[in-house]
Length: 157
Image (cartoon, rainbow, N blue to C red; front, side):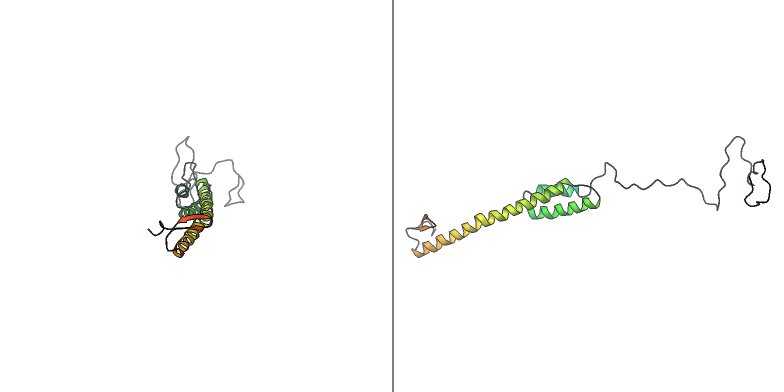
């Protein structure tokens, strides 16, 4: 082996001399020399790209709350469900509760709108027609509105 600091020296079979600070005990492994005086540490473990298996999914609790609210308060449940879904997707996790809350909220809101226009609006217009017909007869007797007979004497109370 040649000395890197003196390449012209012939290789020798004698091991290099121990460092100047002292002889290591016989039979003990020799320590590696430290350069620059900094201590040597083991390398850090590689970063983990996935959360631990038992870690909570971000937005899961909000997704469950949105699911429960989707049966009662659809607009709030829709907003909470979307927020929970976005949080879960940013963390790379799936959130079935939030997806279900969004779907149920949208379906129930559409059904509510259909029900409103199919039942409530015709009921309001029918009642206004009854009031107008009863006003015409002075709230006495009966009138016929849309093929139905209505007693106007009860309408004045």
